[in-house]
Image (cartoon, rainbow, N blue to C red; front, side):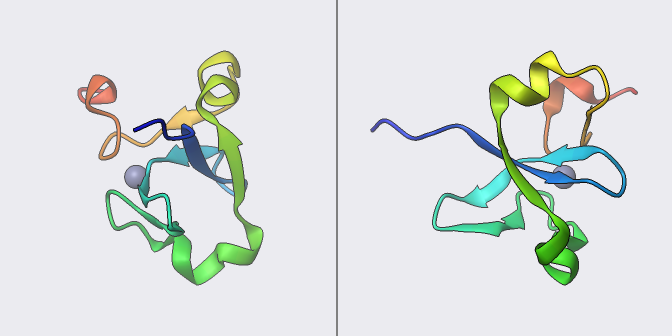
Amino acid sequence: MATAVTRILNPQTNTAHKPCDDESVRTTACGSLVTATHDRTRIVSDETVRTSAAIERCGSCFDDVSGY
Ligand SMILES: [Zn+2]
């Protein structure tokens, strides 16, 4: 199954979250409060997140960030 790798970016904190599922990208895998401010969130590609030094990755959504 080929799925587009999308991330949910909260511009207020420059934090990227993993979407809970592709059908409901307003819900994050960590259950963060993005839903409340979904009109301010942006959907970005994983490549954008990985290549942007300004974007932090949510430690709850991304295992490799744990310990930050
Ligand atoms: Zn998260």
